[in-house]
Image 1 (tube, each protein chain N blue to C red):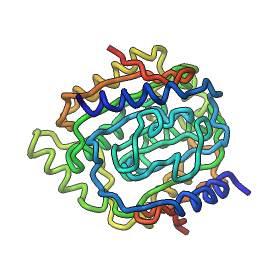
Image 2 (image 1 turned 90 degrees about the vertical axis):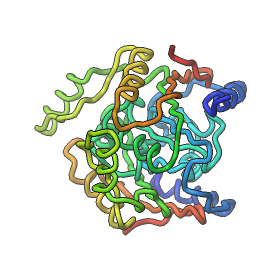
Image 3 (image 1 turned 120 degrees about the vertical axis):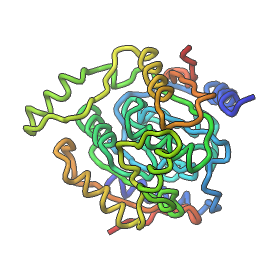
Image 4 (image 1 turned 30 degrees about the vertical axis):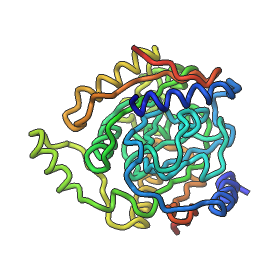
Length: 162
Length: 162
């Protein structure tokens, strides 16, 4: 049995205790952008319930064009007003460089990605970089509450980046 | 008190019961790509625990360049082998068109996004489109288990797209 099949069996249990549907717009009017890291259970970390917040995730929790797209849709069409950005300690993005990652792909498959891998060397600096990308975007209308945090994978705690 | 402050208070409670750190690579070697929709609690829907799976999310759960980047890092650097793609019923992406969304932004702020908004008109067709983008990518090495689903926000159940 594949892991996918195992998780589908879990879903049958989840559905048995499920009651829906909830409304489409997020009840707490907040969008969270977080790293894809397996140790960050966003609903748990923030005490969220189903229906309350948009959750956007990628490698690093960085802001690229696709996160601007998602945030623009979140705010403009679905009414969110606050943004919470989450990076975390022991992040995989701290363990390589864009150049070496892209070179390894080029050597293996013959094609070098035209995109940035978005690796970084300092957590707080990269949180600030992602916040700056949000603040300078023309496409995101509400910027009164855009705050960045580092999740500590040892303690479960969010520490704000000033 | 802002919603962000309220969620930070929840985090203090979460941290009080937290035990870590877990290892960095996802224990179940799976990456999930899902829509950012507030009603999809990915850990709940799939019965995942902290440390088991990468979770990548955006508006629609579509595959754009940034999801290819995240999946390439997930498989090449952190050992995941299976991919689960999740769209859902009552999706906001069914309620507008790229052209009208981008025109409304252009009229309001004077700049038209150079990116696609990735709106779609049929759920199953868009799941297949996202699966095709994964299967045709040179940068994602493991494609033996790439499966797509529609989450039903009324029942909590995942239905596979053939």
